[in-house]
Length: 270
Figure 1 (cartoon, rainbow, N blue to C red):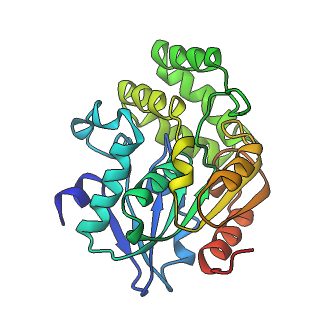
Figure 2: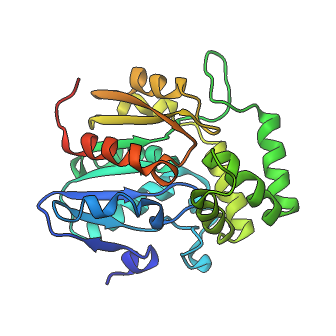
Figure 3: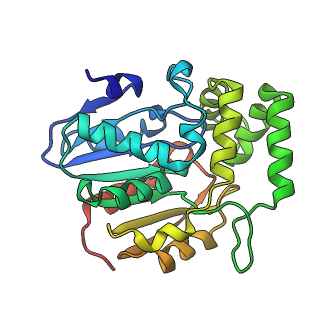
């Protein structure tokens, strides 16, 4: 196993001709795809990995300067693909990893045949003529809560992010992976994500995109999916699901898995 693979706990499953890369978002790890993976391994070569900073990665490898921007993560994705000798892939990115995939595809469009964006947003802060869902005051309070008592913040944030029943298995699972992060790393990652703005890059994306969004999502208002559709420089299609929460692949797999499979397999843009 190569250095990059090992650092990111990369796993390669299945043996199909096409490669699918599954990239998780903030506060989770590759286990967030556990309901989807069994449906892919018979037909595809599936690559799973943990984003640097996840609780399953070595915190000593987390470079605060490198990961102060999404580009640092995007170059990690490219490095993983190169080390695993992937010529092209279908990239499925959840949350911030949707935008990380977009950034990576601009740098190396040859490596990507399709981007499937799940609960992605190019900017979380509201702006003139743009609704991202958060005011600066909201983010300041969020960061302060993380700093003052990380465990308490995790317990409060997890059910809000996942949506639905506070005692659900999905909430418990997200709470576990969220709390697994080292608090100072979690705060740094959260700042990078919530303060990011990739709107100016969208026009440079040339790889076809599928935009998948929950009807109700604490982190990403449903209007953001239409903003992506209108501003991406590639062919794109939007599907808004009747799901609740920012991690629908974990909380509503019966709804989300068929949707993801359709967008992964279908090459006809509508």
